[in-house]
Image 1 (tube, rainbow, N blue to C red):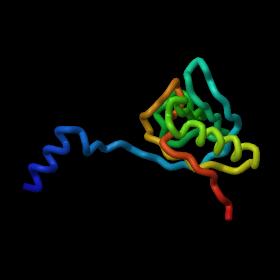
Image 2: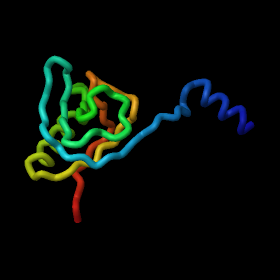
Image 3: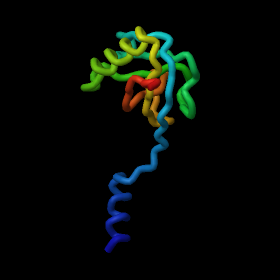
Length: 109
């Protein structure tokens, strides 16, 4: 029975093995692009383990329900010179940058 359930989940693609990475990064710049319809965050360091072609670029689609919150967090972190913690899949790219899943301001305390 257990084997049948696992086989069913695999058949429907519910058990995917995606490499998710969490990294602490410094922000160089933050902005919005009408060309790609996305928020962009340029980092000072290269983004570890990303397969995307631009290694210092994070992106979030403007249609994402959390886009305005992510933009606010990124601007606040940049203005306070705080590092951010970003969670992303290594092979999920958007307009040459790494598409992020989550973002938080890194606390040094």
